[in-house]
Image 1: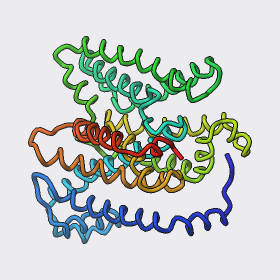
Image 2 (image 1 turned 120 degrees about the vertical axis):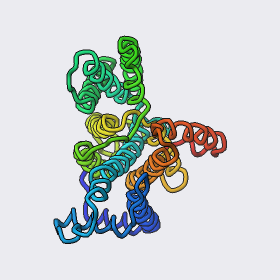
Image 3 (image 1 turned 135 degrees about the vertical axis):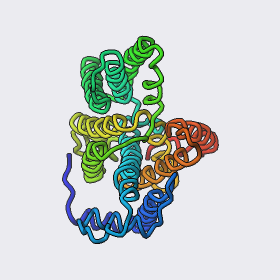
Image 4 (image 1 turned 180 degrees about the vertical axis):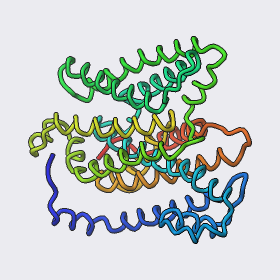
Length: 357
């Protein structure tokens, strides 16, 4: 993968100033939404109290917390904040992975779930839940989901290589094959679960309920580090869209670049799915719309998609958290709204929008 010089970064910032302002606006809006979300729920908490709790916990200044009730501190720091941060990170991660796969597979309709990594995570989580129910074990569904997601990636790469190399068509076909097998496995697990199938179904619907700091610690480094690597080498990803022959002519090692981005996108997807379950359309719609509204340059598209994905998923999670006493899985809402919305933009887009660049 090619290295970037300081001069190239300077030229990038000069050419992309309006996108930077737009991104800063989204970041500020997201921060305000996070603080606002911390005060909403069964227990209403004043924004000033929230700021003091956050300041006291982050800085370690106990004096800021002395006048605040213990239950308010617990609600803000132990219950709501891990869930909100998990939602922001998952939304950002799915959007980044969507950018990667749409460019890597040269398909504007690709998403983080295209090559079957999410199905592998779903199978792992379903298996862990089944073993916990039937054998009385205490296996982590998050750990099993992450493990099986990577086993799925290894299987997809192995099949693609046997089929003639890690090419776009081979990856998609291998993903379809593995997804079909694992989907049948999930159906079999649900049948075995019997009356306890509801626990598996709820996970598969996608939810941020009861997220804890351990979930934040799992997803944060993978999304942040993976997103930074994808952004730094975004020019290689842009060139990959031109096709293998053109990319090789421009000095890009296509096999290595495709493998690196495949691992990055799959790792981000695996981390997000293992924490939240299957949350659809964030990774498809966010980069697709931003590519149409702003630019197809991944140097700009990746950070904008990350912030927009975080904002949208936080809004969706707040909605399902507040509208009903019996919480609706957020994956249901994103699919209900995202599906018809995507149909609309697909039918009303100009022909030029079908291209990645």
